[in-house]
Length: 206
Image (cartoon, rainbow, N blue to C red):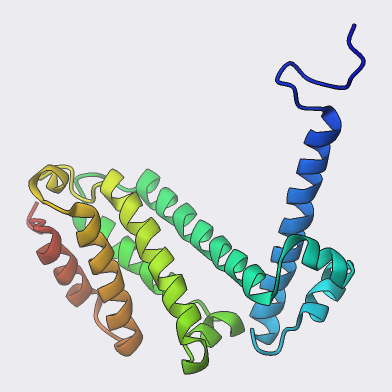
């Protein structure tokens, strides 16, 4: 019997445990940063605040993240993960033949992502954090476009086979919708649905 602590794949048990512990500790720091950003805002949260919240040293923070910007990027990743989870629930719960209902619920998700009320999300809309917001928007559009190309809104007309550059169309649509909603937060849902259906060549009468 081998006593070197290795599995059949050549990875020691200690290495697996260390990797799991690293992922857990890193996630704890990201969760703490997100909680503080949402409570106090980005500008008013320091690395020291984050380490105090988690109960770790600054040196341990720097073991996982090079700076505050890097942990902030990880927080944005969590928001994107929340968005993708919402899209998954949307896809699983909708009725394929009820296109209007599907589009209305999609618009609701867009509003939720863009206008969720917390200090961090509000800070993303400021001029000071314009670059960070652009980074968030690009990730939001990229993941949303990838998801939607694989989960058609209208399988009856199967726009995925009838349109060229489908991913790019969704990307531009999402960025455009986000920009429009930021400047026109009270826009009527019917207007937004019309924009989507015209862009994707969906027959609302279906």
